[in-house]
Image 1: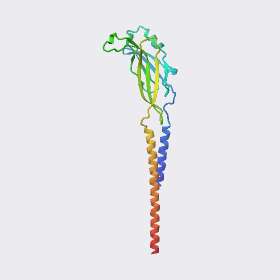
Image 2: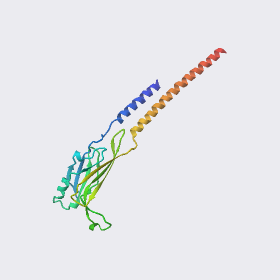
Image 3: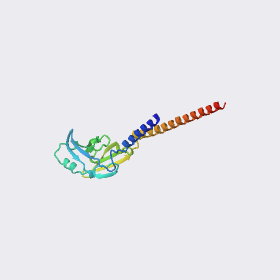
Length: 213
């Protein structure tokens, strides 16, 4: 009776684990909302929401052109020292991931002669996403670096690259452990039952011999 209860308990745990593992945090092609923040010195002066058409989509590699009106209009304002304006991209929907602050204008580094080096302009961002497929479809890593150009009027590009990371999955490991425990329990129960049958058979044989004697 105790063996049957153990099997039922293991089946219940296994079923609940499989149900939890079937939940997905994201689906392929889901848009990831991005907010762009502009800062002059240490003061944030503007927020801009990227539309869904140009936002990253989960698991989809693509390159889009950033609607640069916000940046162009910003650089035409009377903000002191345009070279102090920086931009940062923030992943919304509870992801809590942000890029570094990228300057709109920055002189290229040529050895130690930084002041005489040509001016570079913000030309886009390369986003690198890592994700895990399986029990949960979820974001596992995030990196971003800015793209620099020498023409202030060239298009601003956002490049989204996705890589699958086959990392350790605790839910899958729990499922495997439960299956192993279930199989081991069944084998132990079968062995115990077989030993009991063998013991009863031997006792019966001994009794028969004693009666014969």
